[in-house]
Amino acid sequence: MVTRRVVRFPAPALAGLEWPVFEAAGARGGPRVCLLAGVHGCEYSSIAAVVQFMRRLDVSILSGSIVAVPVVSPTSFAARSPFVVPEDGRNLNRSFPGDPDGSFTEVLAHHVFSEFVVGSDVLVDLHGGDLVEALEPFVLIDDSPVREQAERLARAFGLRYVVCDTTDTLGGTTSAAAAAAGIPGFIAEAGGQGLLEQVEVERHIRGLRSTLRTAGVLDGEPDPPPADQQLVERFLWLRTATAGWWEPSVDVGETVAAGDRLGTVCDGFGDVLETVTAPEAGVLLFLTSAPAVQADGLLLGLGAALRQI
Image (cartoon, rainbow, N blue to C red; front, side, top):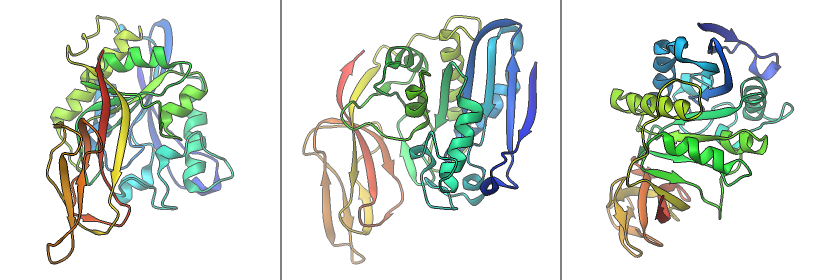
């Protein structure tokens, strides 16, 4: 059966906060899956997907167990705070496995990782574009000793792009910390711009169901990966040198050649301060959708070095 409980952590920094948690146990033995969402509090379609998946779950076809946390960062969710935790301005998904003696975000990461991720056999962390971020759906894996298992599970999620940047990997993510602990997992990105879109909720649920079938957790055959699924071996994050008005010339999902114009940053009179071009060929995986940008502000993510898998 699927049960519900409310978790409270003993750390003084987290006093008064609560985490609703679903747990499901099958009649047959199998892997333990940790399912997370809401690491960033404004990624609503992924949060809804965890809730709806667990509410629909038929445990008669479940082998093993699932622990699911729909909102990992409750204060980010409550404050509608994109990207960072409001208490200390840190990005929770750069803070795992955390530090029990660190800042608010590091303490939160430590307790979430210790309580839910440690002891699991598989990690699936659902994300999307944040409040001012448009996104082409993709999955993110880490180059680690458990990469082969993680890639198999991630490919089964059924998105066109599988990102594994071996040249400049992101540190402190849920999946990287899990991989360091020997737990294969991945981050799935779909939806964005602060919208709750049922089509993106269903995309997450469909992918999650296929991944769990691949892992032997759910009965049934997984969906085959898309015929045009591609591995992205470099993930380039482009930033602006100056503050101003950001106006992209491209949209997410578009492919570009090296040197193509991606957009401009203008001043208050509309004069161009900076023209942003593609450093190499690739596909636009995410894009800042708000015109207001600060100096060194993130503009877009370009997936490069693509190859068919």
